[in-house]
Image (tube, rainbow, N blue to C red):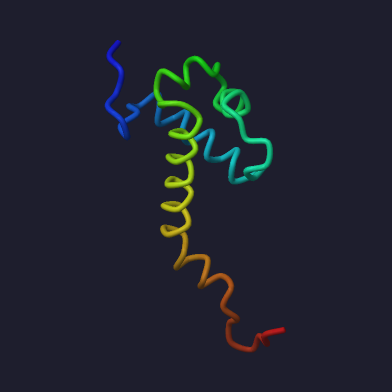
Length: 90
């Protein structure tokens, strides 16, 4: 099995990245570690080190993923927060 180029984690790495991103979105950055990320991804820290160049690389990719999610959900989130007809802002 060949290691992916930096920034390209492959299908398995992408699935793990998604799980770690979900964990960070739910639990925040407090106490973030490679071992916590591995638990969230359902793997070991050594496997994460195969796909990512350390905790800093993983965290950078997770933050980028969170940013993409936020940008993608921006219009829908803004529409949901906007008061409709007959609703008042508090």
